[in-house]
Image (tube, rainbow, N blue to C red; front, side):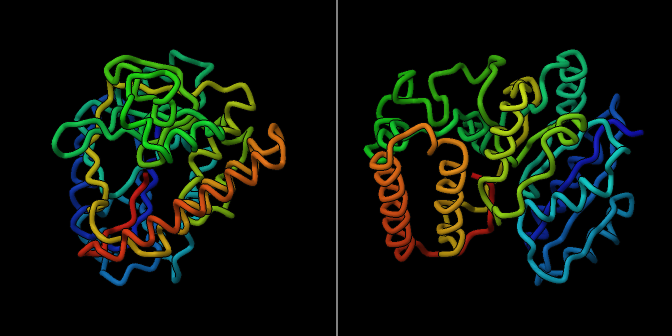
Length: 297
């Protein structure tokens, strides 16, 4: 049995994936791992590149885009019973040496932790804030819609969406980490199940963390493992479907895990607000210049 199965779902972005795999090859010295690249029918020759340049990686070549969750589940099922941990890793990341060693050793000591995320930083060195998050609530959506989370990032009340008030250099128990780098214990997967394939691209990681917490597993933000996240040119123009999938996923998570705790008119306000923000995002997208590569938020 190996220590970690690293699962990378690709869709185009050959150059970013190559850089990611190069960083993976030399990132560990104390942990055994295997790499599974699941390609979701890229139009670029991603599969050919991986097989030619990274022969040690296993490749699953899908004939259609199955989405993030279903593609990861293919890798999870392939290594079921063969790995102690699974690492979901975005192809637009670069792992710093020792990151996987450090986080696996921490998880080996912290037996009650089912999921851990690392310190994700952008290429300019600033924190990629979604790497630590709280569970969603109606008030959180309200504060975010008004921009209070960015105006008062150090406020425990207004800054809960991405936990901006927590010290990014300290270890914290959190509600959720992001699927760009998500380490999950095999026992946790066995207990809570695979990723929900009803989510196509976003929300699977948040839903997984909800399910882990409900099963009494801890979720941890571990800053002593650092990874650079290029975010697939996320500032560029996005596919309209990507924007829709993001807001649809938020509503699906809220409806599944939160709605039963609130009155109908509160849930109706959340639904209206989310799709109002979706419409605003679609409108802003009209004025952006270039289509970006999908990335975890």
